[in-house]
Each structure stands twice: as C-alpha cells, then as structure tokens.
Amino acid sequence: MNPPGLLKTTWIVFKKDMQIEWRTRARLNALLFFAVATLLLFYFAIGGDPGTMRKSAGGFLWLALFFSSVLSLSESFRLETENFALEALRLAPTSPRAVFLGKAAANSLLSWVLALALVPLTVAFFDVSIKEGVPRLVLALALGSTAIAAPGTVYSAIATNARARDVLLPLLMFPVLIPSLIASVSSTTLILGGDPMNQMGDWLLFLFLFNLVYWPVCFLVFPKVIEDD
Amino acid sequence: MWVKALPLTLLAIAVGLIVCHLAVPKTRTWVWKVLAAQAVLMFLVQPYFALTWAPREVMMGDPYRIIYMHVPHMFMAFLALPLNVILSVWYLVVKKSWAVDALSEALAEVGVYLGGVGWLLGSIWAKPTWGVYFSPDPRLITAGIMVFLYLGYLTLRRLIEDPEKRATWSAVVSILAGADLVLTWFATKMFRSIHQLPSSPDTVDAQIVMPFRFSLVAFLCFMFVLVWHRYRLALALRKNEIAPPEAVGQTQVIA
Image (cartoon, rainbow over all chains, first blue to last red; front, top):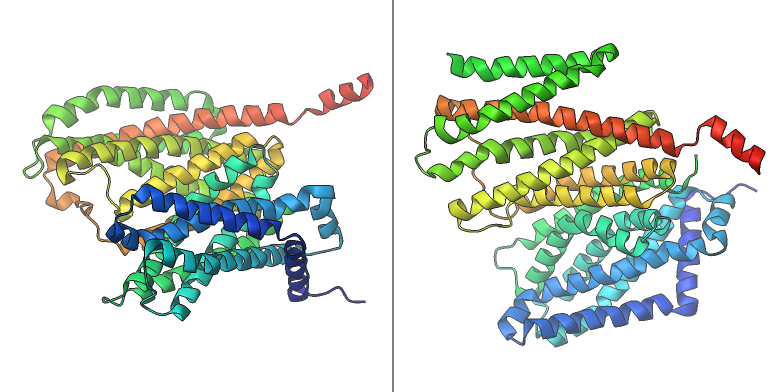
C-alpha cells in the first residue's frame, strides 16, 4: 500500500485535531469564555464613551482574538506531548510538513470560528454596525485568523518544549504578529465604521501578503523544529 | 581637507584591522586590543567634536547633536541583527556549527543592546523636535519591533537546555523575525511618517558630517570588540555544555 501523499496526510492530521476538539469541545468553550471576558474588560476599561467605543471596536475584537489565540495555540501542541503523541505521529510515518499544514489549518479554523462568534457580541457591546457588509468582514476575519495561525503553530511547537512555555509563546508571537494586527485592525475598523477613502482593499491585500510570506516560510522551517537530527 | 580625511583614515585602519583579525587567525590574540584602544581613544575625542566643534544646526539648534549617538547605535544594530538572520539561514541550510550558533548569540545580544539604547536616544530626541516621545512612524515601529523580536529570541535561548535544540529553534525564530521586519516596514509605510529623511552629506555642512562619520567609526570598533568577546564567551559555554568524551567515559565507569 502506498503511503498517503502530503495533502491526504494533511487532511488526516486536520481531521484528527478537529475530532479531538469536537469530542471534548473544551478548547472552544474555554476560548469563547475567555474572549468574551476580554471584550467585557475592554468595555469597562473604556468607561462608556460611545464615540471612543465605536472607534475602538475593531481593535478590541482583534485584541480579544490575539489573547485567546495564545491559549488555543499552546493547547495545540500540549496535547501532542501527552503519551508521546507527536513521536507516534511522526513514526506513523507522517511528514512533518503535513503536521504543520494540518495543525495550522485546524488552528486557523478554530480562531476563525471564534472570531465569527465574537462579531455579534462586538456589535452589541460597542454599538457598531457592519457598514461595508458581512462578506467582507468574514473575509477579513479569515485572513487575520490564518495570519495568526501560521507563525503561531511554529512558535507553539517550539514553546511547548521549553521551560516557562506560557510566558514564551506570547513573547515570541506578539512582536511577529504586529504587522498582521495593524492590517487586521485597520481593515476591520474600516468595515465597521465605513470606508469613504477606499483604503480597505490595501489592508486586505497586505494581510494576504502576510499570509503569502509566512505560510511558505513556516512550511519550510517547521520540519527543523520537530525533527531530532 | 583633514576634515574629510580623518574619519576615512580611521575607518581604513578599523576595517584593515577587522579584516586582518578575520583572515589571519594568528593575529586574533592582539588585534582586538588595538581596536579596543582605537575605540577608547575615539570615544575620548568624540564629545569634543560632537558638543563643541560641530556648529549649531539652523532649524533644531543644539538637540540635533544627539545624532552623534543615536544614529551610530541604530546603524550598528541594523548591521548586527540582519547578520544574525543570515547566520541563522546558514545554520539551518548550509552547516550546523557551534561557531555559527555562538556568533548568532553574540550578534543578537549586542544588537539588542545597541538597538534598545538607540531607540531610547531617538525618543529623547523626538520630544524637543517633534513634541512627542513616540509616534506610529515606520522607522520607530520597525526599530522597536526589532528590539522586542530579539529580546524574545534571547529569552528563548535561555529557556532551552539542550544546546542543539536551542541552536535550531533560535535559528527558526530568527528567520521568522527577519521576514517580519520587512513586513512591518511595509505595514507602517501605510501610516504617515514624521521621521525626517536621512540627510545626504552633500547638503550638510562638512563640520556637521565629520563628527558623525567619526562616531560611526568609533562605534564600529566598539561593536566589533563587544561581539568578538561575547562570541568567545558563547563558544566556551557551548563547549562546556557539550560533555567532552572523557567526562562521558568517566560517568559510565562510575555508574
């Protein structure tokens, strides 16, 4: 029997992660509560000024997503350390690149679902309307989620094996994600607040570019992270 | 005439010594001492050139004199950290060697120090000239992120005990950081910028340019000596971490 190819293996890894998630739903539930709590904290910290709240809604939405993505990403490889699951996965044999693609896709999907779940709450808390239409917002959230997931998956694999992993992951990840944060927040703010100057396309293009740089780079370097040679 | 010749001569001496150090291993015991002496002598003279010899600038007055410290710090950081990215690619793709790993560590640490201090100096300069300490400007953000990326890199190095994994993983982190600097630059370009464009030596008074070039050469010598010593230290630590064969044999006997 021929071993399955890269895409097939990726799909198997993705399905495995999703199945684990679906059976417990522990991660998504915890993430949802954490993200909602973060949004509420921002709501109280800003002190109820409607103008400021409307202007900052996009930023708060993305910060809540960034903070909860740290939890979700660190969990993504922590569950592989139990019972040497990662070693077993590699002995299967699974190509490390397929592990990266599968895991990064699963992480993207998870944070995209979380982002979609947060949109109604953001609209309710911060009293904004989606002026440029829902499809564009869905696209911006998807591009931002994949931008977090690619470098995040690599850092998660590194941080899981280091001491003080909970501190290390945000320390490595947040500075790298600043360009994507700038672009995600700018495009989302324009979608929520209206885009009279037609700048949103540029920001979405930049987010796409961020993905275009990081997915191949992470794809190439990831095997070095989980191989012992 | 000497105004142009002095920094160029000093630069030629410094570059000559550095090349000699790199090309001829035998000279490595003493060349760095000469470079260190050159740096010390230049730093003794530099305040005179920077603070009294150079004329006041027309628009900014005296605060502009901080360029003699701020710009060399930033230049050297922008020399050290991209070099770290190149070495990391080298480590992963071409050859896994402890020397490359030790040099990356040295460059990252010196680069973070120079970049961090340069960033602070820039923000001190920004207050009297722009009226703010910080603004979302492409250069300020890129430089700040660069320092934080490599602070993370240095933290990572301290949190991994296995030297081989540390070398590989920190190389990976450095490559992702390198890609980020390019992207950050483009992302923040989309904001408006208040940082002045770099002046060309042709349009600036020679008496302002000379101390600047002088400072750059002094910082080059200074950085080279720092990196060289940090590299030696890192390499010695690495060799100590990897147990020598004799020690492994003894442990087995005792066990």
